[in-house]
Amino acid sequence: MTTPISVDLRARIAEAIEAGEESQPLIAERFSVSVTTVERISRKLRQGESLVPKSPPGRTPKLKERHLLWIRGEMEKDPYLGSYHLSARFNRRFPKNRVHRSTILRALHQLGLSFKKNSLRSPAGPS
Image 1 (cartoon, helix red, strand yellow):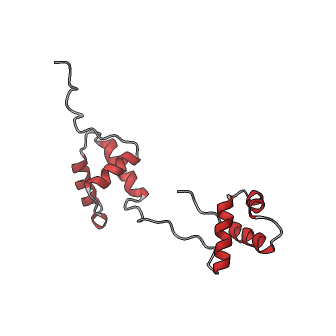
Image 2 (cartoon, rainbow, N blue to C red):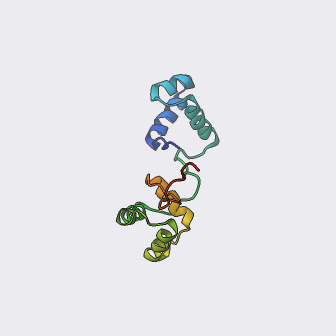
Image 3 (spheres, rainbow, N blue to C red):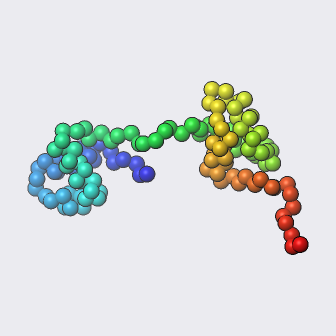
């Protein structure tokens, strides 16, 4: 998802719409936004809604930047640490922010760290 446009820019687009001197495509071109954005702002003006952007949907992330840094540090200390052990360490370290193993796996993926189930075994060879 992209970041919402600023309230200032929304206000300037609204002023241009209310002035009625240009069509919506020309207003969109002048402010370097899509025609759909101009249409949405126009609809909000007609309905008397606020131009302030709504908060993004979904939950806030469970892991903050400091948690990701801690996870990266733990993996640098012991690269063979399993996700079950890492999640147990995390929950001991941050008891108010307990997470499931799947959250740790998503964090590892987000950090670009791979998790191999069979990393200690030799690869299967021809039989």
